[in-house]
Length: 127
Image 1 (tube, rainbow, N blue to C red):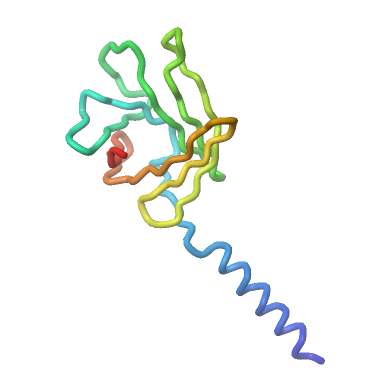
Image 2: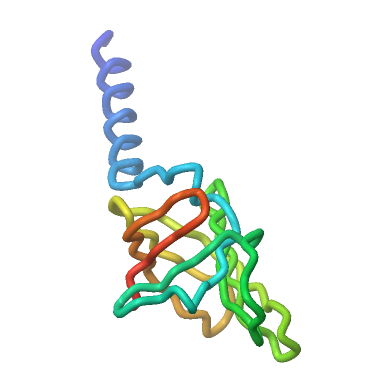
C-alpha cells in the first residue's frame, strides 16, 4: 500500500517531463520588438534590428515581437504606413527554431529559424 503514492508521484513526474521535453528556452536578448532591416538582407537570410535602431527612411517595415510567456506579435504594414498587430503564441520545439501560431481567422502559422543573434541584430533564414 505504501508503494502506490511513490508510484503515483513517479508517474506524475514522468508525464510532466514529457510535456516539457522538446521545449527550448530562449535567450533574453530575443525578447523584444524586431523590425526588418531589408537593406541588410542577403541571399537566403533576413536581418532584423531592435525597434530602437536608427533605420533609414522607408515606406514601411514589417516586424515581430517575441514576448515572455510564449507571446508573439506580428507587425504587418497597415494601409496608412502604420502597423497592424496580429497576436499569437510561439513554441520552440528545437534549438534556434520558433513555431508561431497566429490568432484569428485565416492567419497562417510559420516557423522562424534563427541563424545568428545579438542584442542589436537578428538573422533568420528566409522561408
